[in-house]
Image 1: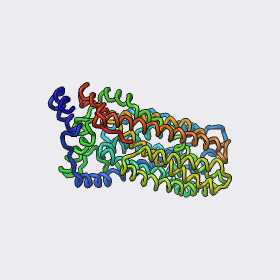
Image 2: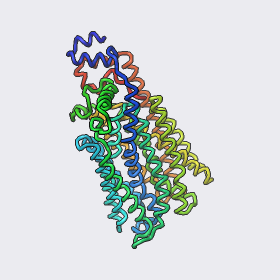
Image 3: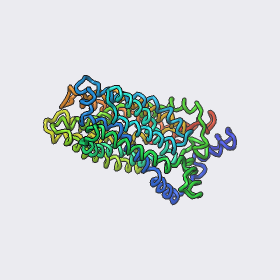
Image 4: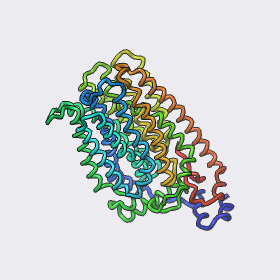
Length: 492
């Protein structure tokens, strides 16, 4: 087959084809890989962890402020669904900005663009503390969503510039574990800040003042330390930089012929390839239904715990242990997922654990059992989200296909906020049966769609193993096949 393809292609294409089909050796350098990963871990992951920590704190602290008197001071306590609407409007710009933000990431340099976003939303978060009206709260939540909207997709694409495909998930887990940690840390912090009464600002404003100011400071620091790409990483030696670029091309498995991500130029061809990719739409569906319980749990856990009969401060503190359990499980599952090079199995297992947690909340009358259920939800749901980040990034290539695909997936998935922010209503307190039931149903659908995606990816990999996709090598330019290249294998 290789000889037949070679005769039909230009010499340069033939060389790439031979490499892709295994007739030319792939280079390996475990020593340099280990050095690079260690350096990238030290110089990149702490900043991404901090960005995601502050991101989740600043979008979710309104749930803590709710228990510290925000609805009463703004005149929306017990008034229909006004508080839920304040949660919802955050996601409108958050959804709309995903794809354009991902396309701008490389153009404006990731090491400048991402810190700019976090600094901007930190200013907005701080400003919420000065809000005196419901309209002001809505405006601030819209601006917060605008600046936070480009972060998740941007971070996924940023990681894909530095790490090989099956090294990414563990790193995704290391930064994403900041989400459950933010719930734990935010609960502790809100428990303290929600009691401050200074200068006419009582209780809830101090949650936004302190957390927003901390975000601004962190964002400014990021400007000075986050590299743009491997080629621009000043902490690498010349040898390390050369290998950092070379190993990414090898890891692309024929999906790109360019030497570095800096050489890739935007082309609508890549946009269309992303849109036509079934794996992108599967991930969008899985993530959509997963985020229904994830977002509602993050926003309403203080209210769920308070519904068990605990006071405001105690309820804030009781949100810490479940979130810490989720934090530990995210790290562990991310590590083992990269070890076995599998995503779908972990998502399915986490979904089953989350389902058990919601069943406990729905059927038990004992607070101890209900509280134990929150642990299962945190452990099952939080770990699945970084799995999906890795899954969609692993199976889309090259850069601009990934950028568009990740943006579309996140945009569609975050539409679940229109459900998640309205299923825990004050009128349903303290049992919140409606919210628990809808979250349970969403996890059942998540499990079903995950199974479908694994089946599709396995089928496609078998086609490539048997040579049934090799015809693509003579249908057009090998360099524009992306993840459709016969040598490219999907991660299950």
